[in-house]
Length: 144
Image (tube, rainbow, N blue to C red):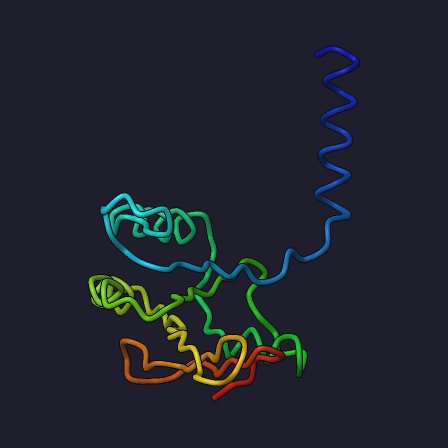
């Protein structure tokens, strides 16, 4: 090994030693489709994302658990993730069995413009298990 590679190895190990807990990861999707739309992800690609996380030790948690992690200091696995789907596209239903198999409880949001009001209002939809994970407003996330 060269001096340079030894330095890089030492810095890498020091970084691992000093690194703080990474905190929860939130994966946010819009639509599951191979349509080519810039906000769509093919179902197979979405499944590959989840399988990669699971195979490398990441654990699924709900958005409500992440909220409690920050608000009540709830303990979470060191490597954890939640899945959200914005805009309530029905294509998300394609993933229902897959999500259920891996015990992933996504948060599903439907955006609706309110007539006469500015901005967007978020409304929670029911997840695959019929349970809601959280409610969302423009200013905060709270467990349902």
